[in-house]
Length: 142
Ligand SMILES: [Cu+2]
Image 1 (cartoon, rainbow, N blue to C red):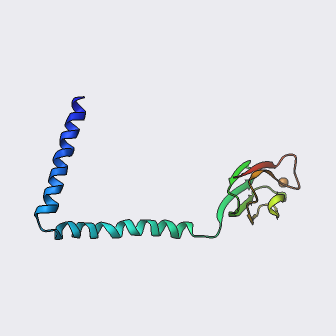
Image 2 (tube, rainbow, N blue to C red):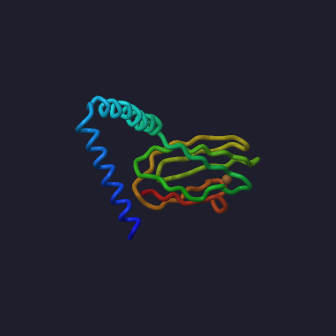
Image 3 (cartoon, helix red, strand yellow):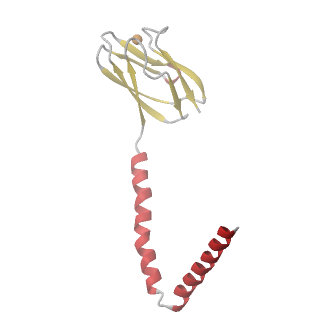
């Protein structure tokens, strides 16, 4: 109760002070500070837009010991994805996401990148076509 009253009084004082500044003294001060703050606000969204403006969302997946290190992905329908598949095994693996027409072989101890567009919303499966029993996972598209 007491705190709320103190805050209320402070807010009232600040409001009076702000009103006094704006109305009484030269308005040049107020304009100058507003102009200074504006470029900072403008540059931040610009940077974000540039970073997000790329064509594809990049994901990573690794195969080790005839197993995927990630067994579930959540994608957005209609978005382009690039998955870098790192095969850490001494045998060939494969990444297949049939519904997105994604199918790539990854030679032993090499990387391969597969790109595709996420299909309609739903629950799908990705698999290594060479070791389908051991190497599979789910892709949830929303
Ligand atoms: Cu495999």
